[in-house]
Image (cartoon, helix red, strand yellow):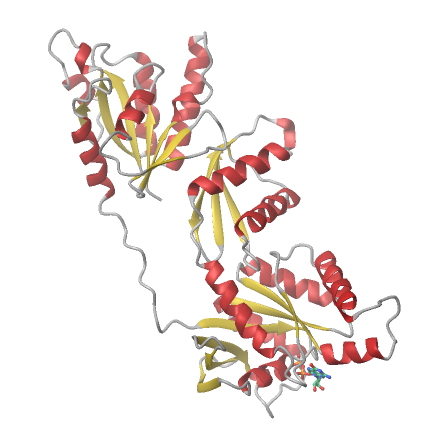
Length: 454
Ligand code: GDP
């Protein structure tokens, strides 16, 4: 998160300076839809984000009190969102009472601040930088946004403060995708684990005991495409052949206590095709979703379900496809909070589609590593917020200024707001669904983190 914000009282030339900073020396400028139209943002050199908060809350012919309030809101957003604040003041005017108020807020925040003294082209007498220095910030630079003086130095000061652009993290060739199989007793976790280990084109190179309760199998798989995939199956003692725990009821609590789910990149929720979604399945699904890891649903014992279907024991379906579709619909309805998870039908007994477990692990894991471009994040957010406004307890004015992906695995989207609010779960799900649809994040949870004045 490399964000630079321009703040200052109205008419000091913030938006002129914003445009100047996006001038010729900037190779690539992306126009960025903000969630609120009052906020101007752009990505500079595909590196840092620059934002002009100056439009927020500003209307023509405002009273000084209203201007003060709007300025406060702008400064608040800048403080929350930016690593570096450019505090814009005016050379010819000198330090004004509003400037002192802004300076006060900035100082209390402890943020890094550069004071930018603008309009030096209009300076008649000598420029007295000392009074600006007295406000006590990192540095003072004199510029003319209109004519360009000092803008090179300002740009250099910004890039110097931010430091070199971070390198894209190197791809770790040896990285393994951690997977774990979760589910109620008897749904077929051990059988699936064993079927996986016996899968053709798979080499189980290592079985290492880690903690008392967890075992790890390293699986090296050659896909049909020739790609080499590496996994680590996190397992509990209960899954080891011939060494089942006295009661497989312990299996899930074992997974929990050994932290297997948290360590997983992708967790598989195994369902029994004969019993459908049981109450306990919901609980397990909920725990996986809370852990924020990738989630794929596996409907196991599909051979038995198909047998029943073929023996016409299941009424009302004319084709196998329809039967399967009804299953999928029921799962999506019962487990409505799933992160749009892929659903795979398997049989540990016949080996049917067991490879699909590995394939979907790769797919979901790849998605989990995606970076969501800030411009698109804001486009999606803007559309979603417009279509359905969040309900806020107490009916207070609530605004989302913009959003930014701040983490992967799981995706975390920080929403910068005018105040810190708690959104209803149903609304958060609505937003999450929007992200799933627009970015195709099947199986990957999306978390939201609201920032604003508390
Ligand atoms: P776990 O408690 O989840 O580990 O379940 P197990 O792997 O021990 O399986 C429970 C029972 O279901 C065993 O009798 C398995 O043989 C049987 N089973 C597991 N998977 C399948 C499957 O895909 N098809 C059929 N027909 N039986 C299965």
